[in-house]
Length: 115
Image (cartoon, rainbow, N blue to C red):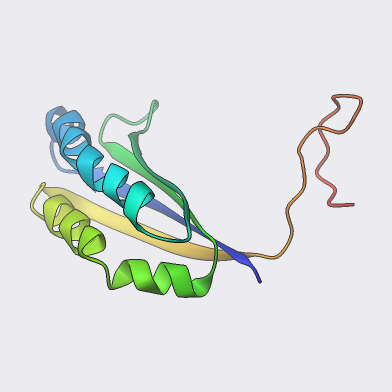
Protein backbone atom coordinates (compact mmCIF):
# COMPACT_ATOMS: atom_id res chain seq x y z
CA UNK A 1 0.00 0.00 0.00
CA UNK A 2 1.21 3.50 -0.82
CA UNK A 3 1.13 6.64 1.27
CA UNK A 4 -0.72 9.61 -0.22
CA UNK A 5 0.69 13.14 0.11
CA UNK A 6 -1.39 16.22 -0.59
CA UNK A 7 0.32 19.53 -1.13
CA UNK A 8 -1.42 22.80 -1.82
CA UNK A 9 -0.71 26.48 -2.24
CA UNK A 10 -3.49 28.80 -1.10
CA UNK A 11 -3.15 32.48 -1.99
CA UNK A 12 -5.13 35.03 0.03
CA UNK A 13 -6.29 38.32 -1.48
CA UNK A 14 -5.21 40.38 1.54
CA UNK A 15 -1.95 39.27 3.20
CA UNK A 16 -2.99 40.98 6.45
CA UNK A 17 -5.75 38.37 6.85
CA UNK A 18 -3.56 35.31 6.34
CA UNK A 19 -2.62 34.68 9.98
CA UNK A 20 -6.20 35.04 11.21
CA UNK A 21 -7.27 32.50 8.60
CA UNK A 22 -4.57 30.08 9.72
CA UNK A 23 -5.57 30.64 13.35
CA UNK A 24 -9.19 29.80 12.52
CA UNK A 25 -7.98 26.59 10.86
CA UNK A 26 -6.16 25.31 13.95
CA UNK A 27 -9.17 23.60 15.60
CA UNK A 28 -10.01 21.90 12.30
CA UNK A 29 -6.39 20.83 11.82
CA UNK A 30 -6.35 19.38 15.33
CA UNK A 31 -9.67 17.60 14.88
CA UNK A 32 -8.48 16.08 11.61
CA UNK A 33 -5.30 14.82 13.27
CA UNK A 34 -7.17 13.46 16.30
CA UNK A 35 -10.35 12.08 14.76
CA UNK A 36 -9.57 10.76 11.30
CA UNK A 37 -8.00 7.32 10.96
CA UNK A 38 -5.11 7.25 8.51
CA UNK A 39 -4.13 10.89 8.97
CA UNK A 40 -0.37 11.02 9.48
CA UNK A 41 0.22 14.76 8.88
CA UNK A 42 -2.23 17.63 8.39
CA UNK A 43 -0.65 21.08 8.37
CA UNK A 44 -1.75 24.46 7.02
CA UNK A 45 0.97 27.06 7.65
CA UNK A 46 2.18 30.49 6.59
CA UNK A 47 4.82 30.48 3.86
CA UNK A 48 7.86 32.30 5.27
CA UNK A 49 8.80 33.87 1.91
CA UNK A 50 5.42 34.87 0.44
CA UNK A 51 3.17 36.97 2.69
CA UNK A 52 -0.04 35.99 0.88
CA UNK A 53 0.58 32.24 0.74
CA UNK A 54 -0.58 29.35 2.92
CA UNK A 55 1.25 26.08 2.34
CA UNK A 56 -0.59 22.82 2.94
CA UNK A 57 1.01 19.46 3.62
CA UNK A 58 -1.04 16.35 4.31
CA UNK A 59 0.07 12.73 4.55
CA UNK A 60 -2.44 9.88 4.54
CA UNK A 61 -1.93 6.15 5.08
CA UNK A 62 -3.94 5.19 1.99
CA UNK A 63 -6.24 6.33 -0.78
CA UNK A 64 -9.11 5.03 1.33
CA UNK A 65 -8.19 7.22 4.31
CA UNK A 66 -7.90 10.28 2.05
CA UNK A 67 -11.27 9.51 0.47
CA UNK A 68 -12.80 9.16 3.94
CA UNK A 69 -11.35 12.59 4.77
CA UNK A 70 -13.09 14.09 1.72
CA UNK A 71 -16.37 12.77 3.12
CA UNK A 72 -15.67 13.90 6.71
CA UNK A 73 -17.17 17.04 8.32
CA UNK A 74 -13.62 18.28 9.07
CA UNK A 75 -12.87 18.51 5.35
CA UNK A 76 -16.10 20.38 4.67
CA UNK A 77 -15.50 22.74 7.60
CA UNK A 78 -11.97 23.56 6.36
CA UNK A 79 -13.12 24.04 2.78
CA UNK A 80 -15.98 26.33 3.85
CA UNK A 81 -13.83 28.33 6.28
CA UNK A 82 -11.07 28.84 3.72
CA UNK A 83 -13.54 29.61 0.95
CA UNK A 84 -14.97 32.46 3.01
CA UNK A 85 -11.46 33.80 3.65
CA UNK A 86 -10.94 35.89 0.52
CA UNK A 87 -8.81 33.54 -1.55
CA UNK A 88 -7.25 34.45 -4.88
CA UNK A 89 -6.40 30.85 -5.73
CA UNK A 90 -5.98 27.39 -4.32
CA UNK A 91 -3.98 24.78 -6.19
CA UNK A 92 -3.68 21.30 -4.75
CA UNK A 93 -2.20 18.02 -5.90
CA UNK A 94 -2.02 14.51 -4.52
CA UNK A 95 0.98 12.20 -4.83
CA UNK A 96 1.14 8.44 -4.34
CA UNK A 97 4.32 7.47 -2.48
CA UNK A 98 5.57 3.94 -3.05
CA UNK A 99 8.83 4.05 -1.08
CA UNK A 100 10.16 5.68 2.06
CA UNK A 101 13.65 5.80 3.55
CA UNK A 102 15.67 7.97 5.92
CA UNK A 103 17.31 11.06 4.45
CA UNK A 104 20.50 10.50 6.46
CA UNK A 105 22.48 7.25 6.43
CA UNK A 106 24.40 5.78 9.39
CA UNK A 107 27.27 8.21 8.72
CA UNK A 108 24.84 11.17 8.90
CA UNK A 109 25.29 11.80 5.17
CA UNK A 110 22.15 12.80 3.26
CA UNK A 111 21.19 10.54 0.40
CA UNK A 112 18.48 10.66 -2.27
CA UNK A 113 18.66 6.87 -2.73
CA UNK A 114 15.97 4.48 -1.50
CA UNK A 115 18.15 1.42 -0.97
